[in-house]
Image (cartoon, rainbow, N blue to C red; front, side, top):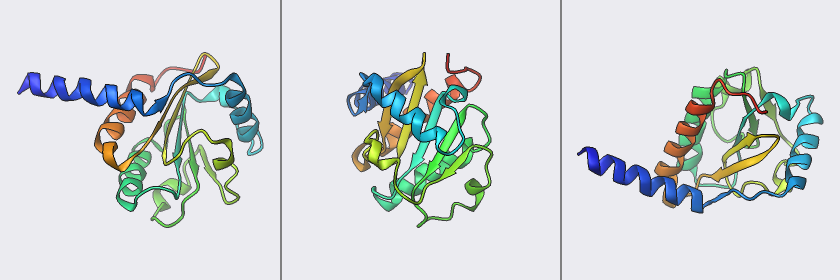
Length: 155
């Protein structure tokens, strides 16, 4: 049973890494910083950004919304909401929430679907989109990354 879990964990991590961006363009970080500043936020205060978009399957959005609710009050996590088709009442009043109506975040082309952006050393370290085919693995990967980064600053 233990080997089965670790085998699945390793396979999940490999799939997530294959479906994520890891070699980001330095310009992407600058564009993201500029975008956040337009809402009065500084990227320097966050090491994780969770984005709920309206482009993915309904079940993916529901599960990712639940993950966002678990992290809504963490100081190092910024949340961007582009989808209002779900009940986001437990998220909308969070301390670090951007409610996006113009879809300007999507114009940055950092995530195809809802997902997470992890910041490290003043650059985009990893982007993970939630795809229906790998939803469970991607959500598990994002949860693990958020957990290990909870008390870590972006420096």
